[in-house]
Image (tube, rainbow, N blue to C red):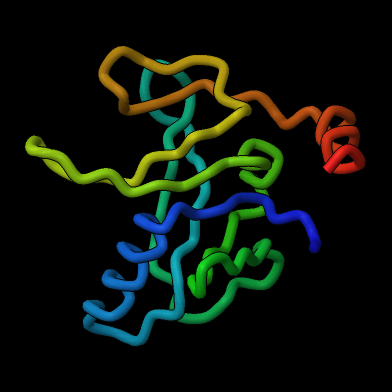
Length: 126
């Protein structure tokens, strides 16, 4: 099985499917990236995908299509995207092994590029 940049929990896959089905325009998936923001450094971005963007990395997990902005790939390797619903609201969350810090308000995170040597070693052990 080829290595995927990121994976989805069942809850994230279900919510993405709902978003796609409820969209006013034809949508085939989501695009995930990062942008400079907040006091910790970057925040995650998500947007609808009507057509794949050349150069984006494609992830298909649990029947859902996600494209990853190539500028974010090294920072998202090994990430698990989840969807959490609670009394105060709901949101997508990212369990990212490359996260080295976060701001107190939860709006931004600090990410380091993935350690490719450690990743390669982990893949040979799997």
